[in-house]
Length: 353
Image (cartoon, rainbow, N blue to C red):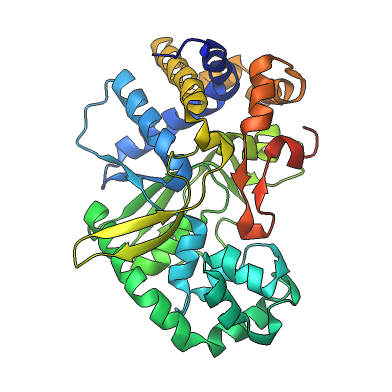
């Protein structure tokens, strides 16, 4: 049911995001159901809506399997924190960053100010850029290995217990928007278990730093995604990611409570979660698109022959001056602190929009 006055957002979801999400999820569900080796885990912020939409698509396809579609609480910075003081710490330094040393520890690992200052030492206000200054950061991490170990050991154990409760010891299969499979790589590094990923798009760097046993898989819309190559699905992907937001936001920390329970801690609210009913109206439009997509007998290949999705996405984002599109321009916001940018509004941040 759409709240009165929100039918325009329902329509916008149908025509802007439906053509992107429907064929991609249809492909993911089809691929996953052909080899149901365990539950399908929908990752983090984006996974909240994607899991619900995948369940809807499976129902429309009348797929009756015992495979579970589960939501996985995860974020890159949280998992990076768990990888501190492990042999896989290099994985946490591969992503670009610009800022001070102290802000890096806070943004990249979700450490509080006190811990960030302790790790930074006299370098706290020094400006750095990664990956250029990775050796400097690595030196500080190694110097403070004992402090870091005390901080992360219990958290790592609590999260691994949570993960084991979802998937056990078998293959771990992940669904995400993209690009470089960082969360899949982090969890593979933490658990040592084989993993496989299903993505809307993946980048050329997908296989970099992948732990043994990882099968990165494919991206539906692109297998060589790269910004600035005139592909609007890639260049403006931040818009889609801003839509796919869990109501509780981004995972920051975990606090163990006994042997069999944990408490997750999340970040502060951003505008698109304060007005979550708008997002739900847009997603309802996507859900209707999935219904029509399936009942029309569509497949990804047939859909690509019928609709130029990239051109449609580009035209609507650039030139749609409707009231509901204007509202999205003001509403959408995403946290890109991991790169040092902080809270970002896609329509102000991305060139061309």
